[in-house]
Each structure stands twice: as C-alpha cells, then as structure tokens.
Amino acid sequence: SALSRAAMPYSPDLVWGCVRKTSCFLRKGTRPTASFTTEPGNVSGVNSYKFSGLANKKTIDLRLDGDAVALSIKVKDQDAVAHKPAKMTRTVKLTKPSRTLAKTIKRVTTDSFYRPDLKQAALAKAGLLKAAQARKGITKKPKQKRGAK
Image (cartoon, rainbow, N blue to C red):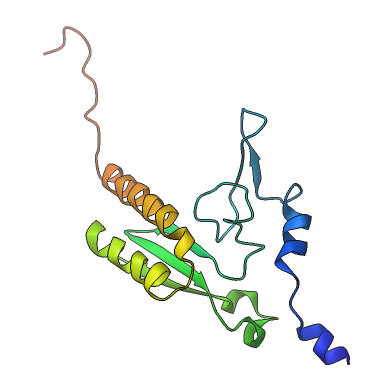
C-alpha cells in the first residue's frame, strides 16, 4: 500500500552513498585524503559513515549556544516525526562545569546505550567548546606605541 511505502525510512547505506561525495556540507582539506563536513549531527567534523549526521539514525551534536553548550540527539521514534524534521532532534543546554558536562555526555552515550562509539569524540568536542568559551571572555590590552609613557 502507498501508506506503508511512504512511512518506510530510507536505508542508511543508501543515504551515505548519496551524500558521501556530493553533500553541501563538505569542506575539502588541503590534503587530498582529508575531507571534513559541517553537517548537523556530526560530532567530529570528519566526513565518514560513522560520524555522519545525515546517514545515521542516532546522532549526537554539540554546539555553542550563548554561554551554554547545546547537546542535541535524534529522537528514537522517527516514524512519529517522519515528516517534521524540526521535531526529530531534542536539544538540551548544558551550563554546568566541564566535569558535570562530561558526566552528562557519558550518561547519554554509554549508559543509555544510545551511541557508545561516539563517547570519545563527544567528550573531545565538549572540551574544545569549553576552552573556546573560556577564551571568549579574555580581552587583550591595546598595545602602546613605543616611547609613549
């Protein structure tokens, strides 16, 4: 029936085959072997099937959102929101210190069996985002001209 075909999701392998080399999110590196991506849901930024936010059903994404780190995951029951892409992700703003942020990421990835293979990449990105937040608050003093007192 037409209804069952419309609700049937696409194969992740098929989606990866389509977006692997022709995604608008691709950013080519200086080396011919390095290719990166800015797609939502890709926690590491590397263009590979493992980290792809478009091809995988379960993704984790970390981004800066003001003074907080925003943790986004895809909803497990995608059939309920198949035609509403904006409702496919759940986003939580995390304003806690780095240690509590790491515990939250471990709980979401490993303890709940969501995507335990992405734990290390998510922790690394969270550390980078926290460091970027700390650097954002630092302001440099203006340089004085030589001889001026």
